[in-house]
Image (cartoon, rainbow, N blue to C red; front, side):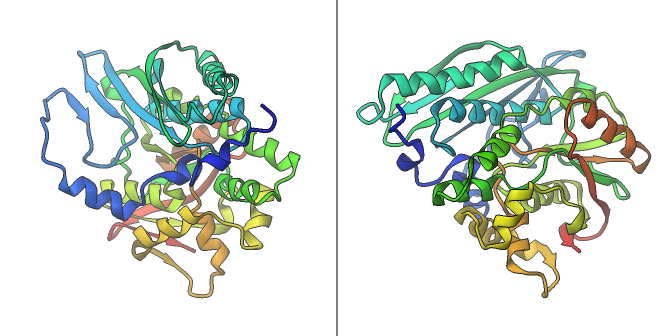
Length: 346
């Protein structure tokens, strides 16, 4: 098992293997209009984190799916990261997870059963931490290793947190530091030391448990999680859905220290370039800003942090909530204002 390197089988790892934003928009535009029942509270209209279906006056079901190719070589760690990332979308809607289904695609002629088993064990360990069962799933024989979950949760209909209800004057809070994609690129280059790897694992396997508590706060208006499109891309989704403009103070962004050093040295993922090509026209940066700053705000985050839009009066309570849940790097990074949908990085 020690001789197996999972990343050698994948052309892109973690959320960095997402389809580029511009291509995804084109593909979705070609899809025919589907059925939209009155009970469907959240669908595809604002690129939100999960679908939400109202069951009754007290309950809504939240459903999402997320899977990807390996971001690390260790099979157990890969399973943990993929499962944490999938469940995050449930938390981002303000819901409490209730169960998961496994999505498994493996090159059976290349990976021993022991390796595949360790991937499944890693995913199951995270589900146990979240207090949910893996109640089923589906598996196929494919060319690249793929693992993830269908994750489901429940929430009161009045507490659903969409990505489209930010308000002018709201402050913007990020729950986890950025830089996971940069660390994954360093890992692939063989320049990430053990301490950097452990730091990467610490963030990518930390469940976004503040979600349900945030949902109970009326002053929290919008929530999403930062994943494959980077902080700029997922903030743009909030701006477009809410019809607002965001201002981000670059120096206030929490960043994993080792990732910051790698970024300054030019380490980045190919997905960062694709992200900028897909939405860079809606992101304003100083022409004097170094290229590494652009790479950082477009860096794909696997199992990234929650991005919260809340009233200024609630900012300290939101930060306290994050810290109470163990998110000590949560920080206020900017604010929203009226204006054309877009992001200004200052």
